[in-house]
Image 1 (cartoon, rainbow, N blue to C red):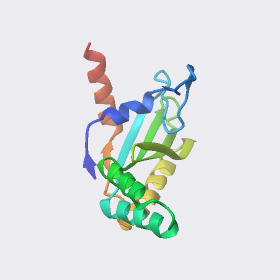
Image 2 (cartoon, one colour):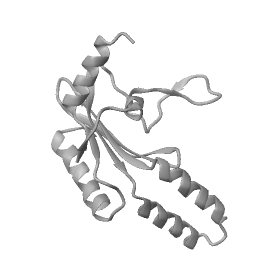
Image 3 (cartoon, rainbow, N blue to C red):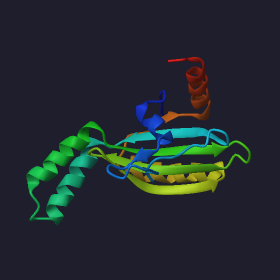
Image 4 (cartoon, rainbow, N blue to C red):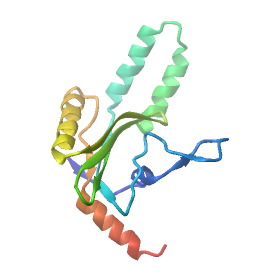
Length: 165
């Protein structure tokens, strides 16, 4: 497991989005919103999809859809090679320490919610992560994760509070 610092994509887990043309904020289901008075980011895990897995997906699409334009599938494959990830992003309630998490994918620039689990103990979170890693890493679909832990998020938050820029 590789350690890393928080990045821009991680910061987006606290974002709210406005859908084009609507003019009103609407929660993106692939974003984990945080009430900073009651909650804190617990952990973020990023799993990069392997090129072999992306190639296999593209070949499956072409094999199962013979009428599909191969150039479109190839274009999507190339777009995905640059940034294809699965993320498990968790937050913790300050008071009862229960966790809420989302499991999202980002393929070819498109984010999608895979699962959302609300207010469960840490053991359930660890089991969820272990199940995903057992199938994803073993099959060669994803590389081992990079992780930002609770302590690293706390340090990141302290640094951002003291930095006026």
